[in-house]
Image 1 (cartoon, one colour):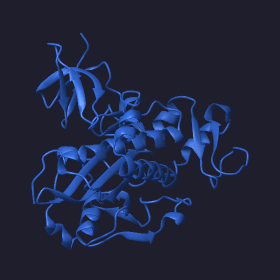
Image 2 (cartoon, one colour):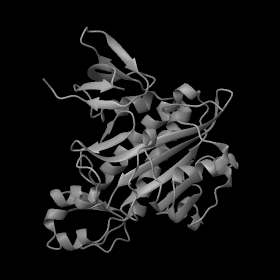
Image 3 (cartoon, one colour):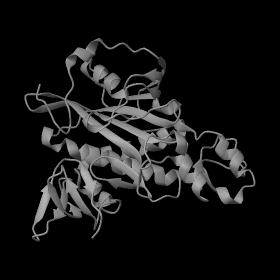
Image 4 (tube, one colour):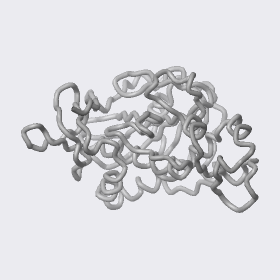
Length: 318
């Protein structure tokens, strides 16, 4: 099994991991009538687990089908890239992982991360009027603060991907005092900070007028604004929005390749025109994605450099 630095492989010793804490196994139509093509045909829901990526990886080794989703209300060992801790308090965010089996090379794995980031941005834009943007390679930001992240891992044999695990976390119900870093935010904080429009599921007992399907309301128009925000955002609704977007983009990717994803991602990048440093080494102004999903920076000498993976540091403008 080949060791990957940016997109890690996992040890098969995880195959002994037990499904402790499982609450329910259900199908897409039982989750807000999801009606997806690939993603979420089977959804494993957990109360608390160590890591949804670990669960998904274990099931992947055991032959679980593509599109299976592993969703937990809380994680005790949630992690991001390079082993960084991902704070995963119960019902304060959505924490889920998906098994994918794309017919791609190991070097192409970053394409799937970009696809997932684009999908989450679009899903959150359907929930709230915010400028949700992707920060290459794996973060979701709004108002220059991180609200979500992605961790992609894989099982590889002889240079071939057997399956990918795409782990995703989005902060939903965290209060400002509960977040570990000032650079982070949540949907709750966003909605409390200013008047905003949100899409509510049909079953939500809100003060909005009854109607079919989801509808939008403006929080500023509600005398019960604070009462509504005292209730937690419906994580299942957010999960459904995310799975629909990932399913749509992944199906398109399998049919037509990355070109359509790249074109959309270009319009939702937070980096254009900013001075960045990659892996504490390459420095320049972020200007574009290439057709493979790599970040293109313009260096001080005017040359363009394509970066396929790495950590991005935003530099202060001169």
